Structures are given as structure tokens and as C-alpha cells.
Length: 182
Image 1 (cartoon, rainbow, N blue to C red):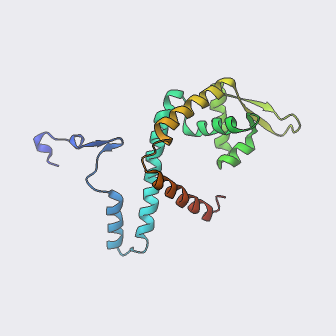
Image 2 (tube, one colour):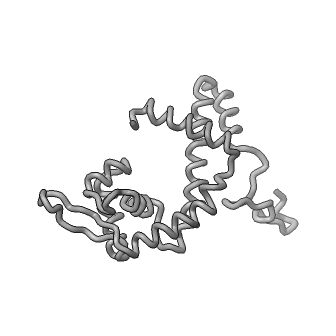
Image 3 (cartoon, one colour):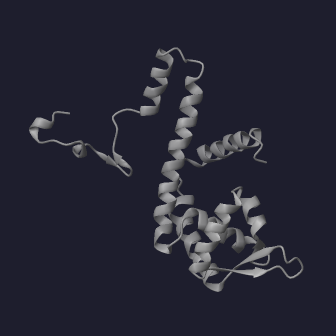
């Protein structure tokens, strides 16, 4: 780009994430991988890098929808786990296991949700070693409203055809299963 004529990199067409690129940088990286003699690893590098970039794109969309509700996706997941549970409460340990995150992450998310009065901690009625996390009425209302927004703005229109979505879910489930995720 010729900067002498007063142009800037921001004069390029913009995408939601910044300047729109003229070519796919991951495809270019794969080409360079092959040139370096790593042709056998190039497809895997492109797949993993594409997956990581797709994660960033999806998370950016989700976080933008959740921002007005004052929760991150991690906190929303805790709310929805409680919302969808039979009693509206679960042990902290169960939350971590179901979300597949470290207990420290659960504690952090629950701390923030509790400060916002969206959940409350209580002792387990029969096992004093266990702390229950219970959804409050305001947490239930927020979970419902946030889900309505996510369904309308992200989940119903994920940016792929219904066939592509089904294929993606199938492929990612296979990757997760092969990795011991379930």
C-alpha cells in the first residue's frame, strides 16, 4: 500500500473483525508450510488454525450479544446449566465436570454471578462437604432473555447452511470423541 498518497490500512474494506484481507492467510500459511517441506503437516496445521480462528469469530459474536446482559459466555454457560437442571441448583463439582473446566474457573464464574445476585451458594442438605449453586429468580430471567437474544442473533443464523452446520457438528463430535472428550 502506498502511504505517500494519504491512504492508510484502514481504507481497505472492513469485515466485522478488522480490515478485510485480500486472500486467506491460513491457505497462504499452508502453501508456505508445503514450500518448507512440511507438506504432510500442512493440512493439519490449516485445519487446527482454521478451527482456532473460527472459535475467535464465534466467541466474538456471542460475547457481543451477551455484553448488554453483563455476562461472559463462561458465566452464561453456568447460568444455563443451572437453568436446565431439574431443581435449578447443582453442586460446584458437577458444574465443573459438565462444563469440562477446572474448578478454579467454576469458582471464579460463580463468584461473579453471585456478586450480581444471579446465583447463590448454599450448603448441601445431606453432605456438608458439598456446596450447591442455585439460580436466583433474576438469574433465571437473565438466562431466558440472553438465550432469546443468542437464539435470534447467533444460534439461528450461525453463518453456515443447515447442511454445513450438521456436517460441522458431526466432524467436531468425532474430533471430540477421538480426543476422549466423551
